[in-house]
Length: 211
Image (tube, rainbow, N blue to C red; front, side):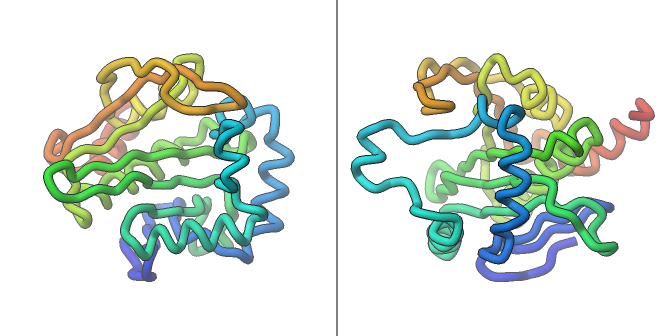
């Protein structure tokens, strides 16, 4: 299910809802991030010193949200909050962000995601990534989606493989993560590779395995 909410749509699938990130999310967002610092810190994007001096880091949460929403209006980014048990008093449990949205001859984007450790292992992240992927292919009509993951991040790589992304290659010192330039493994999925849709494949896989 898709609810049109410009510039970022709200997507619902079972107990998981992706909805726009809002300034009002600040207290909950900060509480989750502080509590999960040890869990999320090694995988967090950072800005090198030259970016800091150029003012590339938003001064606060409100500035970050405004910047993301501006990018969303320009069609370059879709920042989603991941909520669990939508329709019952959904609780924020993480984020999924589609970035680098490009049309023309490339028609590509990438996904980044994180989840509260208390909710890890329940299939929430996999479903959220599948929902965002289906939106990219079915609504935005993109050709290629990619996930760039540090080789050491076994949990995130497991999500990529569970959803149906496949390993494409290795990118040396690709992104500035946790204070330094880090190597990444790139996973990709192309429009049409999963005929019935990414969510449908994931649902079928879970039903078959019972997990």
